[in-house]
Length: 151
Ligand SMILES: [Ca+2]
Ligand SMILES: [Ca+2]
Image (cartoon, rainbow, N blue to C red; front, side, top):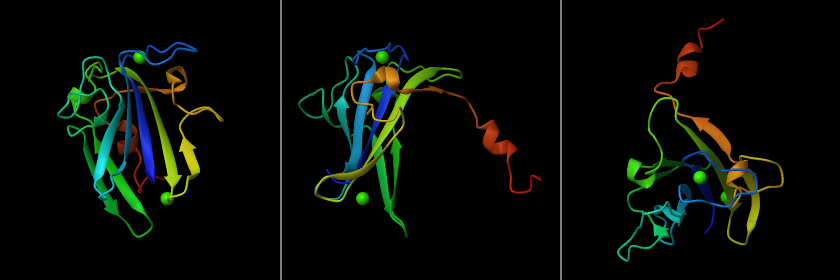
């Protein structure tokens, strides 16, 4: 896969130091397929979730919507994860989850640079305890409180 990014969810925010993945951890790789169509590939499924005609634990997840758009300076991806893709995540105010992103810049030969949300020199791969903690909120008060008119 060329340019792509991986998204990591520890839905119960229960990873402890040195722990490997558990049943609620989910990993997706998002990018373009060989035909240039944006797709989300399920790399590590949560317990009880299967994708594709063969009910596999890994593969392209058609329930996850991925949009791709070329821009003047590159491209944008947008991904919509439906609740079915994250069945252990409580979609309520104050809910906590572990989260990470790993961006791969690969123009064909190999990854030439990357961007990781996490500790230096450590990828999110099999390190759920190193992912960041995210808190769900019902609105975005910080964004509303800051406007261009603020002095
Ligand atoms: Ca977990
Ligand atoms: Ca690139």
